[in-house]
Image (cartoon, rainbow, N blue to C red; front, top):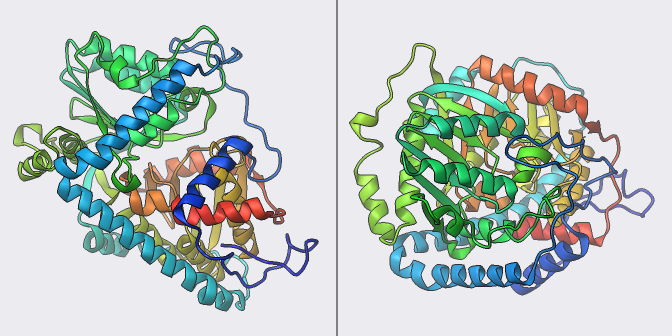
Amino acid sequence: MVYRSTSQADDARNFITPRRVGPRLAALLVLVTMVILTISLGPWAAVAGDDQAPQRVAADDLGVPNDATPPAVTGVRRLAGVAQGGWLAAQTWYLDPLLRPVSNVKSLFSVAIKSLGGVMARQSINTFQFPLLAKQPIPPVTGKPGMDLSEWERYLDDAVGGQSSGQIELLVDGSEYFPRLLDAVAGARQSIDIRTYIFDNDDIGVAVADRLKARSGEVNVRVLLDGLGQLVATQVDPDGLPAAFTPPAFMASYLETDSRVSVRTQTNPWFTGDHSKTTIVDRTQAFVGGMNIGREYRYAWHDLMAAVTGPIVAKLQFEMDKAWSKASLFGDVALFATTLRGSFPKKARIARNANDYPIRILHTRDHDSQIYRTQLAAIRRAQSYIYIQNPYFSDDKILYELARARRRGVDVRVITASRGDFAIQNLSNRVTINAMLHNGISVYLYPGMSHVKAAIYDGWACLGSANLDKLSLQINQETNLATSHPPVVDALLQRVFWPDFAASRELREASPVEWTHLLAELLADEAL
C-alpha cells in the first residue's frame, strides 16, 4: 500500500488516495533489485527510528560469550554454498517433476492462481476500496464486548474442520525454549522428529546437532529441512559467533556423519518452501512456533514457541510423517501411502486428559490458505480488540480489513520489529506502518528484532510460524495453533502482549518514505 502526499513536507502527515507505483516489474528486475537492496543495505535496515536491540544474555552450556568476533566467511564456504544451491536447483527443476509430479503441478497452479488473485485483489483495494474507506471518519475506540466465541468456533468447524484437544504452554524467547528442547531430547525414549525451516550451522546449531547425534543410537531421530531456507541461512554468520568456530559446510552431512540421524531436505518447486517449525518427541509432546535452530533464536531475538501435549500431538505427528514421506526418494507415492494409512495408527492414540481443552491446527498449503482465511474472518468479526505481533507485514487485504475494523471502533494495535533481519521487508514495513497510522491503527516498534508471530482477536489466539506476507499466507507450508481457551489467551496477553507494548515505542506520526521504500513495498507485495 503506497500513500502519496502533495509535498515532501507533509508526506508523513496527510492521507491521500492510495495507488500502485508503476507497472509490475519483470521477474528478472525483481530478483536483481532484491539482491542489490539486500547487499547494499544489509539485513539490519531500520524500520523507523533508531531503536536498538537489548543486550544479549550471557551464554549457557550450549554457547559461548556473545562478545566474540565472528569468523570471516571463507571462499570454501562460498563454494560449498554454490554447490549446495546448484544441487538444490537440479533436484527442484529436474528430479521433482519425476518423483513428485502431482505435488509439483499442484504447487505450480497454486502459486499461479494465488499470485494472479493477489494482484487483482491489491488493484481493487488500492484503486477502489481504500479511497472509499478514507472518506469515513475514524472513531474513538468503543470498548464494546467482543465477538461470540462459541459462534466463532462453530464457524471455524465448518470453514477448516473440527478441533482437536490438548494443552499449550507458552515458551517466550530462546532462554525458555532451548533448555526445554534439550531436556526433551535427553529424555526421549522412542523418537525425535524435527521439522524446521533452518537448522543453522553456527555454534548453537552444531551443539543441538551433537545432542541429537548422541541420542540417535538409542532413539529414532529424523530431521526435515527446507532446501532454500537452509541454503540462505547457512551462508550468513550471526553476531557473537566465536572467532575460533568453524561452521560445517553442510549441516545435513554434519548431522548424519558418525550418527544414525536421518536427514531429508525438501526441494522448492516454483519457489515454494516449508516454513513450519515443529519438534515432536515420542509422539506425545510437541513444540510449535516461530523458532528455527540457531544462535539468534537462542540469544538475540524475541520469539515464541508453544509446548503442546494431548491428542493434538498425533495430528502434528501425522503432518510430519506426510512431509517426511513426500521428501523421500519415492515422493508422491510415499506421500499417498502415508495419507492412506490414516491420521495415526491406533497404538499412537493419545488419551484425552481431563484438563485438555480445544485447540485447532491451522495450515498454509497448496490450495488451502487456512491461516489467511481464518485471520481475515476474525478481523471482520472483531468488535472489541485486535492485537497483532509480527515482523513481516505486507498483505494489503489484511491491512485493509484492519483499517475497516478500526472504523468500527475496534482497538487495533500492531507490534513489529524496529530492526528486522531482512532489508527489503524492513523498508516495505515502513510503508505499511504509515498506512496503519493514517487509518488510526496503533503501531509499536519493539526494540531490536521480534520474530514473534501471534495475534489475539476478541479472545481468540492464533500463533505459530506464519508471517503476514504473501509467502506465509498463500505460498509456503506453515503451521499455526489457535484456541479461545481463556487461560491460554490470558497467558499470551500477560507474557507477550502487555510486556511488549510496555517495552516498545508507540509511533505517533508517519516516517518519511523514499523510492527505496516504495520499491521494496512493491517487491514484498509481489514476491515475498
